Image (cartoon, rainbow, N blue to C red; front, side, top):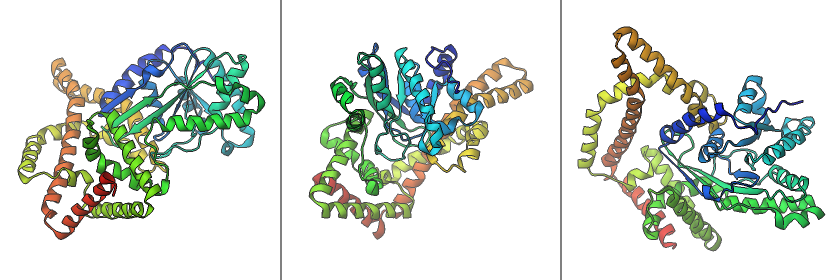
Length: 447
């Protein structure tokens, strides 16, 4: 018999830990985090939250930190194999769900899990289920599994169809899945009820759950950037950054607002989808141009933003001056943060699934950085015997660590702009610039 713990109960330890981990998540690990649609979440109903799943444990954290409530999660059972890890996962209010690959005999255990989940819902503790059942590193939404429908309808059935459970379709967006100091956006859609499906469910449960699964799939898609065709996904995704500035100007939207970025990206996908449907020949030409453009950028080791935001040598000189002045700041921050910053590489370098990379970096970082800061500060204390100097040193560590990272990003950008300026008058680079204009013309003017 599984010991599922008291995940439905409020935990003070969980609440205290959440304050620290949310700060590290929202203010340090990510450069910008935005939560939209929280007003759509009812306060007095059983709740199932149904997000898309792209980035392993970071998806769960995105939902946890978006809401003030203590949430309960259902996750794949293989991460519970180690008893110590299982205990930690139960502390974080995560319950296992078994899949066919775990063995047919274990599928029977899901009945216990579902009953526990219903108990949690009845106690007004929201439950989060990733209905795709596995993550994917694409702006896409897989076919939904039946777990969320089974739980929702079973709760209604057990309560005489009076529970009035609400399912919240939710979208999670990352500007980059793996990099430190990128952007995160979480959008909660309007709640979806089951009342209109009750009679159909009584007559044919399986068919009705399938029907509702299709509706929920559509509702989640409304909250995300959805690229349907995985064969051309990478070209679509690349196009989002190439065209977003021009589309933003056309729609009179501020691209700095993450909500607008989602609107703009959806519009780009819609236009290219329309092109694929109505003008397949031009669509195929566009895809080939994108591939050629990407290959050209790779050859010069450049990103699209360098060509878009080409800077003069005068502006580049200003950046170089800032870099030179900032060398002491960088060295101090780099040296004092070196070990905890690179420690996760020991684990992530051998990962088979890169989508766990940011989860490991963040998970280790929230513990290793404070530990090393304390150890390093103790060394300073033993050397100086000065509480003031030790305190100043301790406070300086995260500040200069972040400044060192910013300096290193500026160096990368300045180096890329220098390489572009060095080659911008070559025939090959001029052709690449023209190719970018052709791509924009197709999408913007829809010719």
